[in-house]
Image (cartoon, rainbow, N blue to C red):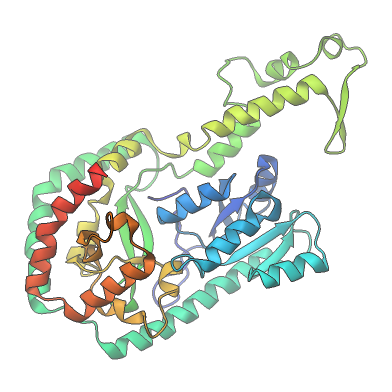
Length: 404
């Protein structure tokens, strides 16, 4: 799965490709998200989340997060506890937000192992400088891991590369009409590139661009802000000002002094209008993610056609048909200890040992530790026979997963 934030920050060798960073922003107040997104629009690509569960769901679908920014009263502390205890997400940079910065808030952030803490208005300290530091730290760890795994050796055997080229080359030739048709449809469906690229860590801890067909609008963040500002989420075709007027009480519409004023955000507001705006925001939030996925994108995801460009990764030598799953940078960073680094000695692959291995009720019940151990087993023992067995087991495993 890819989200709206699709711009890579840095490539192999440390070359910068963009000044933008991808942020997961957790806050139950949508207005704060709009202010934050507008304030950092030139530097950050911000994805809004209203609950910690939705953040975790996106992470499990490999959202390419450079940093998580979460409010303490919106599940930020609970999410931080889970992130830091997770073997897969534990090293994602994490910034806590508080209503007011204090010594107590700073001490809480330190004890919870947050990377930093800011007031919700970000009026004290430089968030962008901190995010840049997080990325430099991540690349330092990456370079150390690359040096360490290089000593172990990670060369793809000739027999394995031959199988990859023959099978994948044949598949690409046969599927070329599908590639061309999908590319044309993506271009006709929405503006933007045909392919989506996500940084992944593969064999020898080398970083490469994983290809998929683009399934999301490139202007998704701007679209949400525009919809919120113009009340486009309302099914009515009435102009915005007319909709606002309809939300007023009779006294306000008549131009008289309102008899039911509320004090909200430092301003007086008609109580009826306040509830009207709140309802409209709630209606918008119910389907705010819908416009992010293109009409064609939903079909591509459901049919897994969006994954086909990974065949190009195999032809390029980034991946193999069989191997260990290529990991997002933040997940790979957690695998740099001596007992786990060896999983990168094997080629990255479309399918692998843990995908076709059942433990307990099924592979969905495997822990991250069990998957890592199976990856290490494959790195140490993979052979022509093992690869053939995994390929033959892959299709039945897919069918079983569909029936779970």
